[in-house]
Each structure stands twice: as C-alpha cells, then as structure tokens.
Amino acid sequence: MRRRKSDYFRADAVQHIYQRSYDHGVIFYTLADRLVYYSLAAVKSKAHDVRITAASIMFTHVHQAAVAACLADIREYLHDLNSSYSRLYNCHYSRQGRLFEKPPGRSQKTTLKDKRSNFIYVSNNHVEKRLCSEAVQERWSLLAYAISDHPFSAALDLKHASPTLQKAIRLVNRRYSKLKGLEYCDLEKILPSLDSTEREQFADYVISRYALVDFSYGINLFGDISQTLTAVSSTTGGEYEIREDYDSFSDTAYSEMIAYMQKSGRLKDVYSMNTTEKNSYLFDILRHTSATLYHLRKFFHEDSGACH
Image (tube, rainbow, N blue to C red; front, side, top):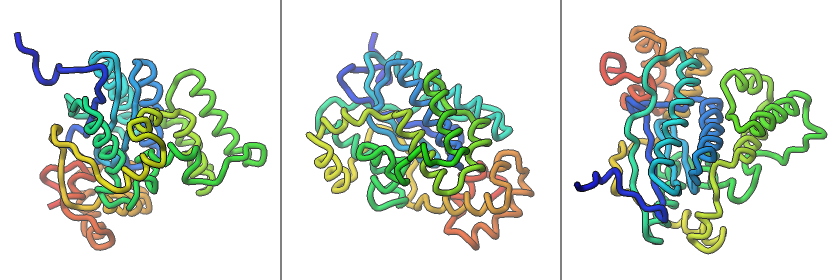
C-alpha cells in the first residue's frame, strides 16, 4: 500500500510548517496574542521533543521550521499547541469554534541547499510583507534574538527596575520554571501597568527566557552568525511545496488598523461585533489607513456580507 505524500518523513530533514487561521483572517492583533502563543509554543515544543530552528509569527499565520525524531511528535506538538492556544484565545475574544486550519501545511527539506533556503524564507516573511527592510529589524521574525537577548530594548537591570516590572519578571520566571506558558489573565494585569520602555523590555525578556528557537541549528547551516545574517539579508529563500495565501499587499495596513481600533476602544470586539457595527468603522478605516477591502475582510473575519 502506497503511503500518502503527507506521511513521508525523514528525521534528518527540516519540516517547514505553515499554520494559518481557519478562515484565513487575522489571528494576532496584540502583543498579548503573540506572547501567549509564543510562550506556549516554547513549552509545548520542548514537551514533545520538537526542535524549532526558525519561526515567524505573522498577523494571519505562523511559519515554523522544525526537526523531530518522528512525524507523530510534530503532529502531537501542533495539536497540543493549537488546542491550548485556541482555548485561551476563544475565551479572551468571546469567540467559539476552530481557530486554526487543519491540517497545517508541511514540506520537508532534506538537502543542505533546501534547508538553507527554508531558513532564509521563514526568517524573511516580514520583509516580504514590507513590515521591515531587514529580518533583524522585526521582533517577530525572531532572528534578532540570535544576536542579543534584548534587541529591541535597553538592557534590563532588575535591581533598578520599577516594582511593577520586577513583579512581571518574577511571574514570567515562575511560569517558565513550571513549564507553563503565559496566559491572557497574566498579561491583562501586567501590560497596562508598564510604560512603553518597560513593555519593550518585558517582551524581549519573555522571548529570550522562553527561547522557542534553537538558533544553533540554523547558524550551523551557514557556518557562523555573520554568514547567516548575510545570507538572510541578501536573498529571500523560497517555498514551492506549500499552498500559501498570496497577495501583493503590505501587511503594514494591519498595524494601522490595529492602532485605529485600539484608539476606538473596540479592538477586543472584532469577533463579537455584528455586521452593522463593523460597517460603521469601514469608511474611516479606509480613509485613515492604507487598508484595502482585502485587509478589511481579513481583519474582521468577513468573507461576505460586511466589508463590501
């Protein structure tokens, strides 16, 4: 009996995993959305012996490059991560139903050339969507954390930090020591109490503490960190085996829309607003941001009805 293509697996290969939302719309609106997902991914990957070698968290999807002993470990990791995150996310946004598309996209990279190309491709997703000009300039491409544990903030001096930031760091350490990710209830208390400088320090600390990506694997593909960064900045890589959503628009529109809805105080209501409520925002969003109707449908999770 012939195996299905989706069952082919080699333990010495890199598995490129492409996970988008069930309706192909926006998943990650806020820093809290990303920190909860990231911290869960870190603890779940370790629990299932899956080594993440590169990752990018986009607005509507996630790319991960992974190495594991068997395909079952990959599948169990994704099931555990997606179900855990969906439960927390649905509760936070008062939504119901599936959050992620099944099955996720997966392609297998077996040659050194393909592994290198995949590392470059995953790292450069934010560049492709015109959110930055270099992968190391974007926090959620994660590549900057191969160079520094605080690439987007001042060095953290806990002795002289505010009591609020000290308390937040203690909470992160406590949950990490118990192999637990962060939860929305934690971050809803922490993030509003920090100033903008402290929020950047806190985000850097969480990403470095949980350390989702094992950069040593990717760096070894190129020789050293200098050659790795040169390769990522000089080419885009490629992926031809996974059917991804493609559009020519910049993702900066999502950042602008998020800022607009935060200012209105209704960002958390994107799922619960009815069509009439959504339509009441459309004209101003189109006027004040670079969003198109395509972005609006993704942002408000409307394939039809609203946003037309």
